[in-house]
Amino acid sequence: MGEKTHKDSPENPFEPFIESLRQQVEDQDPVILIGVIVALAVVVITCVFLKYFLTSKTVQSAILLVGLCDSGKTLLFIRLLSGKFKRTQTSITDSSAPYRAKNERSSSWTLIDLPGHDSLRFQYLEKFKSSARAIVFVVDSAIFQKEVRDVAEFLYMLLTDTVISRNAPTLLVACNKQDITMAKSAKLIQHQLEKELNTLRVTRSAALSAQDGSVGGSVYLGKKGKDFEFSQLPMRVEFLECSARSSSKGEEGEADIESLEKSLAKL
Image (cartoon, rainbow, N blue to C red):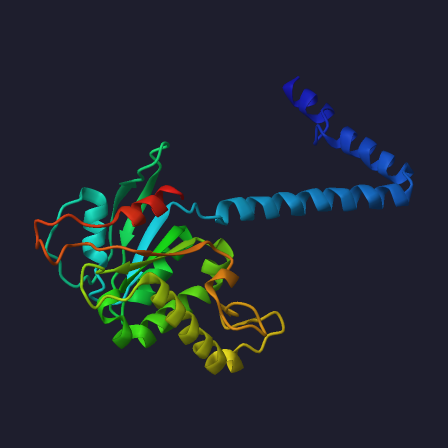
């Protein structure tokens, strides 16, 4: 009895449905079928693209402190977090901590201090650049004239990076150590950096051979045919003066970082 029931039942329960569907497809106008297939293909491709785009996009929630060695990055990092003075040494790795901005929203970001040594800086910048909401580029205003070339080369590599150019994080150039008598003003530092970056752009322009202005993972700095100015960049740029310590009051002196805190509050 059981064997007979098994033999009478169809081998594939979906076979009648499939046969009916095949018959309907054959009866349809080929033009309509092609249109349906194209429409389905467009939907599938769109879904795949959106999934890739949404999952690959990194949230920009970090504030990166970058600059040459001994520019005062680490002390600024500590001052922004606690307001206190602490003796520091040259960093060989990154340090990070939550930072709460002094604004009505009490916005919270991740503050990251990156090593300034030339053998490490780009390695760590590569690691964190895609998450940067802002980049605080710290300059030693007291010895800027001696370091202007090195500062400009670091800035050039940073500003011509394709990821940074595309994400356009806010760039805050913190002219630190303003408490020292020989410190250069933010305005003078900006002017000299624009001149130095313009020179660097000319000497390296031969490498930028692509028609769209990009080659080898970098973009053209500023606007072609015009002397470089920071106003030409795709991101908001601000030069400000600050001091992570007071040379007159020593370790007990308060930091002058109010202008930096105000700029970070605008993020």
